Image 1 (cartoon, each protein chain N blue to C red):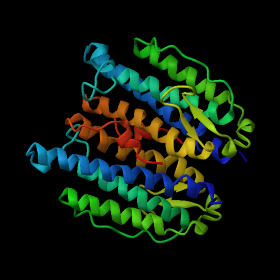
Image 2 (cartoon, rainbow over the protein chains, first blue to last red):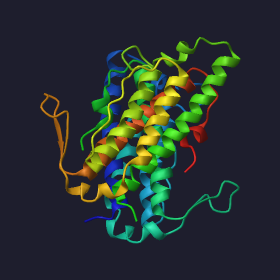
Image 3 (cartoon, chains in turn brown, red):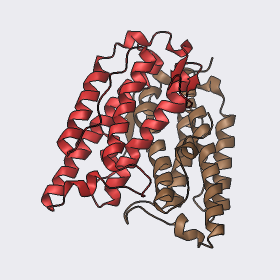
Image 4 (cartoon, rainbow over the protein chains, first blue to last red):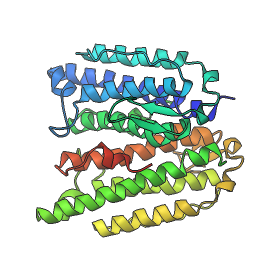
Length: 170
Length: 170
């Protein structure tokens, strides 16, 4: 049996990012069918000081990658945010999913007692007493925030999606 | 130590619904300061076939209540969806939080092996082999969907909120 914090992170990210990848595919079809300029969606925002769709997807992927690595106490691989197209975002998701799949569940042992420090040495340094509070009070809420905002942006712009697309296959 | 699925549900709902309550208070002030008709926000939608803000809050509360009760195998109290005002939504959140606080963590014992059936006897009946898949592949994604959509609706309508408001205090 896997560590409860493994079960509450890696498979969740896999389900939801897998769903996001299919949402992207539907969105690309929507864009192609209507001859929409892709950036009209990729750069869409719900409000001027919110991140655009593309950035929401990038950040969701970042949490899908960084949360498991912090819980497993392994290095966080750095990805450049250089995506420009739907194809680039598919690749970002695929890279994130492949990485998450490769995280060794055994490395989660003891993570509930391991202090986790975000942005160490900066004014925004933040400490979590253990993996549980890091994942449940921070990592999952952040991940779902960006994932749902990405979905909401597409719905707001008329892409035909439903809750099933968001939920994916568990 | 509490059951891992208690830790991954009740405190998460408490943190996030507590934050939502403060978001509502900021929204009320925004509405009062600008002499906005409250329904302009309460009934706002991101797209015509999506639920309005009020319903998003009601559903987030529903998951905050029903998920712990299903994991603890206790009866789900039924709340009427008869809210009309911001004050009503505060009351709905308060009722949900009080209920969640009262759920006995000890009743989560064994929930990982307990089958959970949603909408039994209906065409949309759905089975989960245990509490873990119910919570992680269904309950949390659903809860965060409605919570984040409520937040996104307010941001889209110009209410001055930030990620910190969404995250609340853990």
